[in-house]
Length: 105
Image 1: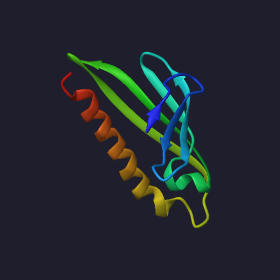
Image 2: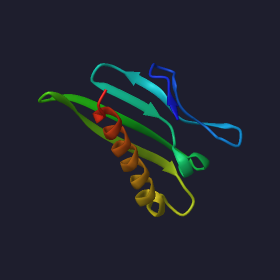
Image 3: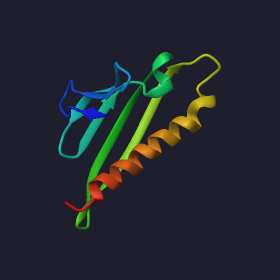
Image 4: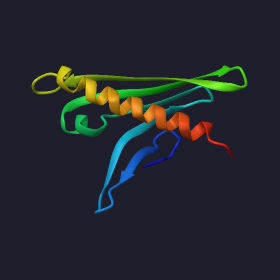
């Protein structure tokens, strides 16, 4: 996974067997906010779109990150059936991000 953190950039994944996936497109980058747009994972093949936003605020000697993924559109059978698995994937993303930024340098 890579991210080109500028407007128009890509949160992309290279597939080891060949190929690639553009998961999200970078829409907004400021010192306190990052917004990415698109559908992730199994949402990509449905009529869905989403906005993944990160809000950064000072917290003591560090930074607090609030993440929100708002998804809308149409999915055959309804989005309710996939909401919990997607929430788990997004939660895992935030956990990995926290571990990455908290690691000693």
